[in-house]
Length: 239
Ligand SMILES: [Zn+2]
View 1 (tube, rainbow, N blue to C red):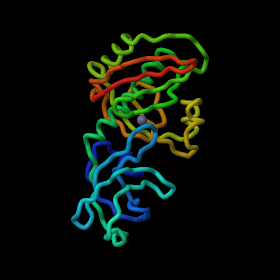
View 2 (view 1 turned 135 degrees about the vertical axis):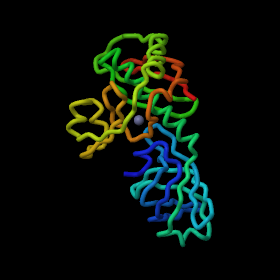
View 3 (view 1 turned 180 degrees about the vertical axis):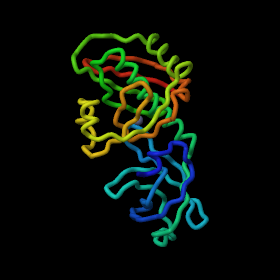
């Protein structure tokens, strides 16, 4: 398991370069482990740099390919000698924590809606600066409306006087199917599923990075709640 999945707060780590794929004027560097989160699941990738042979090389983008987590960098004449070399990975921690907060906030908001209406399931999350939102889908169509004030009050409670621990757990596919029958159809059908568990709420499958307690989300604000047929879109901001 790559380190970004087990520790949100780790910003420097050593690894070994295991593969390099050359493109026009850039390269994709693969390592035996990484703290860089690859762009996926509605969460932006980490940025930062790798120190190799005493020199710092910017990581411009990180994505998942069939070969693993690809760290994209500008090509240079030294790249061919990097295979098997040690590197020190450094991520921009401000960006990481913002993304982890935004992502965890999406889960917390989903849970609040699910508790208010058990017909709702989270279906989509988009955790980018200035445009964060989640979408929930109704299993049975209703015309329920949701009060922004009431939801905001609940957020205030759950991020301040009644804050909750956030943990990653692993469950078997069969356990996920019984806990989350709708969502379990949309995830990779692997034997072990990584779940995010906010204390007191139903765990949800997720491969993102999260903060360790909802008290870190005290600036969370809901900006808009919109219904479109059987979908509820909730926009929010956090800093
Ligand atoms: Zn998540």
